[in-house]
Length: 82
Image 1 (cartoon, rainbow, N blue to C red):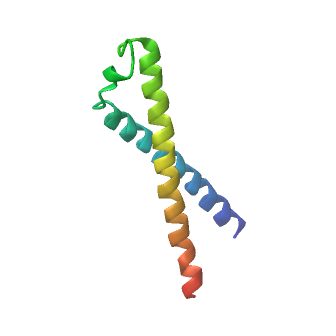
Image 2 (tube, rainbow, N blue to C red):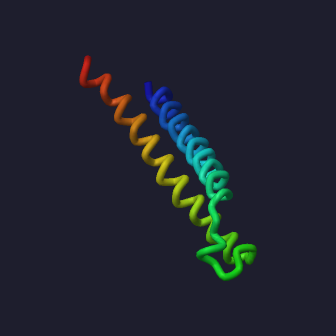
C-alpha cells in the first residue's frame, strides 16, 4: 500500500515535469512568430533572446499549471461520484 502511494507520487512528479517542459517548448515555438522588432532596439541581441526565453518560461509554466490543475480537479471528481 505504501509502495503504491510512493509510485503514484513519483509518477505525478514525472508527468508534471514532462508537461511543463513540453509547455515551455510550445510557448517558445509560438513566441518565435512574434514581431518583437517594434518593441526592442536590437531584436537579435542576447538580451532580446533572454527576454524570449523568460517569456516562454512564464507562459509555458502558466499553461502547464492550468493543464495540471485541470487534470487534478478532474481526478478529484471521481471521489464525488463514489
